[in-house]
Image 1 (tube, rainbow, N blue to C red):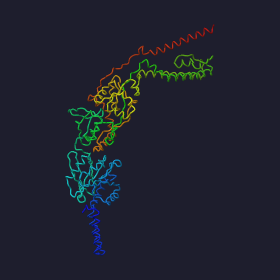
Image 2 (image 1 turned 135 degrees about the horizontal axis):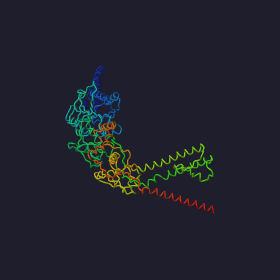
Image 3 (image 1 turned 60 degrees about the horizontal axis):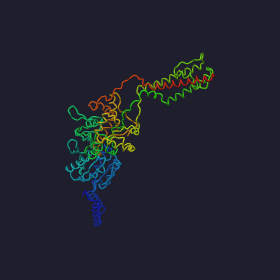
Image 4 (image 1 turned 90 degrees about the horizontal axis):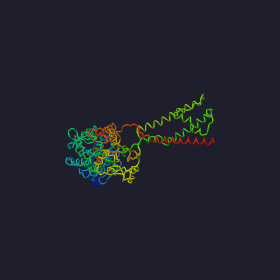
Length: 620
C-alpha cells in the first residue's frame, strides 16, 4: 500500500467517484466517501506523512547544532519517501535550499559547495546506490550525512554492509534510519577506531542531541598509516634509548603531537628515505598509505592531495665561497675610480671657492689662473699638512680655515674607514651572480634527478645550461655529497636546510659555501604533506597545523633541528678548513702602494726638471 504509484491512487479515486454517481448518494454520504478516499489515498501514497513529519523535526534539530547550508536529497531509481510537501516544509522551516537528484545523474558538488552540505540518501540497503554517492561527494566525504533505508524492518546485516562500505570509502560522519523511525526514533552510527562497532541511539525530540560526535577526538590508540622519510631536517630518524625508531624534525614533531592529541600511535617501522616524491604521491593516491611526512614540491599534484601548507621556503643554489682578494688589491678598492673622481671634482670646486674668497679679501697677491684649480694651501690643509697662514686674517678667512679643517677630517676619516673595513674582512673576487658566470668558471651544480625535472618545469629557460648541472639519480649519493660540503660543486638547497649548513660552518675556520639569492629557482614556495584526497584525517590535521603555527612551535622546531642533528651525530663539528690567523703586512702586500709612490715621485721629478728647464730658458 505504501509503495503504490500515483496512477494507482488516481485509479482508486475514480472507482469511488463512479460508485457515487451510480448510487446517487446524498450530500452527507458524499462527504463520508470523500473522507474515505483521502484515507485510502494517504495509505497508497508513496510517502508517509508521519515519517516525513518526524524526519523533518529530526533535521530541524540537527540544523540547530550543525548549521548546514544546503540539503542534498539523492534518491534511488525507485520512488522516494519524501513528497513535495516535505520539501516545502523543510525550506520554510529551516530556510535553506535543497538540491534534488537521482542516482542516474552525476555532479561534482565540491565545485559549488563546501563541507556544510548535508546529503540525505534514500535507498533500500543496496550498497550499489552508495557508489553513485561517492561520485557526488568526491572531496566532500567528511560532510555529515543521513542514509534513509527503506526496509520495512531493521536488518543489522544490511546495516553492517552499509557501514563497511562507508569505512572502506572514508565516510565516517554518517547515520542511518529505517522506515520505522516514525515510531521507534532509532538511528544508527558506527565507529571503526579500535574495534568495529555499530552504535544505536534513540532520538528525543524535546532535547538537542549531538547526533554527529567528533570521531577524530579519540582514535582509541589506532596506528596511523603514515610514511616517513625524505630529506633532513624535515624528518629526522634516529634510535631511542630502547633501540626503537624515533621520529624527529619539525615535520616529524607535527605527527608526534598529532598522534598524542588524538590518542593514536605512529608506525615508526614504516620508514623509507629512498622514495622519490613521485613514488610517495602514487602511494598516497592509491591508498597504500594515508599520508606522508615527506614534503614533495607538489607542482604537478592536485591541491586536493595536500594538507594545509606547513612551511614556506626559498629554493636556491649554495655555491662554494669565492677566494678573497690579495691584500695589495685592497688599496685599489679603496680608491675606486667613481668615488675617487667625485672627491677630486669636489675638491677642485672648493679650491675655486677658497681662491675666490682669498682674492676678494686680498689675502693672496699675484694670483695666477692655476691657483684657482690647485690652491696649494687648500690641498695641504685638506691633507693635514702645514701651510702658510695669513697674519691678522679676517673673519671670512678664519671661517675658510675652519671649513678646510673639517673637510680634511671627513675625507681622511672616510678613506681610513674604508681601508680598515677592507683589511678586517677582505672582499671576494669573481663573485658568481648568474648561470652564465657558473658556466664560465666551469662550476657545475650537483642536483638530484627529480629536483632537476622540477627545476625545468619552473624555469624552462635554464634548459640551455643543462651542461652546467651534474644530475644524480640516487638521492642518497646526492645527500652524502651535499652533507659533506664537497666544494667541487654547487648544490640546490632550500632555505631551511641551508640554515643547518650555515650553523655548521660557524664551527669552521672559514666559510665553505654561501647562499646565492641571484641563483634562486623558486621564491616563497609552499610545502605541504601529501595525503589521500578523501582522507578522514585531513580536517583534523589541517586544524592541528594551524594551531602549531599560531603557537610558534613550527619556528621553534625548525630552529632546534640543527641541535637535533648534532645530538644524534648527523652533524660533525669537525673543522674541514684551515684556521685563518691575522698576520702582519708583508712587503708584497704594499706593492701597489710602492708602485703609486714611484709614479708620484717620477711625476714630481719630471715636473721639477721641467720647471728648471723653463727657468733656464727664460733667463737666457
